[in-house]
Image 1 (cartoon, rainbow, N blue to C red):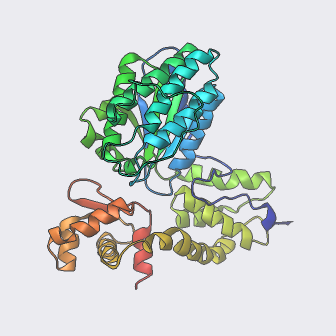
Image 2 (image 1 turned 135 degrees about the vertical axis):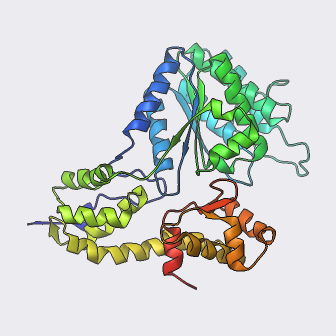
Image 3 (image 1 turned 180 degrees about the vertical axis):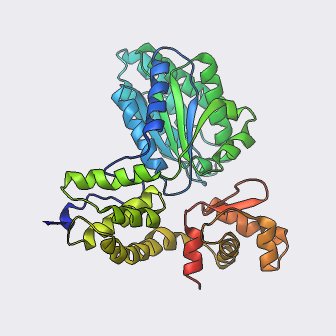
Length: 397
């Protein structure tokens, strides 16, 4: 029997951290390769939007798609949206990086676009009250009359059109990656949609790749009625059994460690196919196992430890962000939805709390802004975090 060395534990539970084996995402990676290849041949193609719950690996996949674009010589930049922040500065920094990666040979052409980028970056909102000394780090004078109107929709269309022209000059493309896209401010969502619409009409080699929670398509649709035709939506879900097993087995085999079939059965039942949970349970199981092959008994010992860690780091940290009123609302959701945490009716939540629906709107809206729940459809609400309902039922106040 071979010892299982904790130092060589291959599993990596972490926010946005790439697992040692990116299993079950071959279809999405292949679809993106087709997008890149079509654009390289001058074919029209839609931008992409990845949607799914927390813990399904959207950020990991977004980073992998970015790596694929970089491998093909594309210019890339990444933004993580925040509810309170305009995209003007983050997009400026991301696009600056993308332009540097392109390495356009004509410095005059590059400087012209960098001047437009600087003008875009420095344009203050009309009601700014405090002088802002922030500079984007672009060593050319800001252009005038281009991407500096102060209207985000006009400015972004002009900026991205100019950047796409540079990419076309060198026969490559630009991909702008936006994580947590559901948190983009309404005016900026409208600007992104308008820019994607204009670029697609031009056949320009620039695409946006967004990732966000399941209600992101509704956010985009509320901004522009034509958004469903602008983007190709890919729903990222749990891993099936074969992919979950591969995520565990492939890294273990590289360390000459095996799993008994019963151990894999137990791990799939515990993790329920969610990639973050697969890594979390796999890591703790490896640490408690004395020797290879890892057994179901090892999983039985490890599961409570993994659950305790998830209760603090994955579930508890989110629960702690909620106010007492918001916690009351979530507990009512958990009791109605049961351990599976399915979507529940907002009217049923109000009824269970003995309240009028309108009086609970502030708590619900705040939970949506904090990314703890989302509106699955009109009149329905669900947790953004898998197994959160089970956590609440198992940890009463």
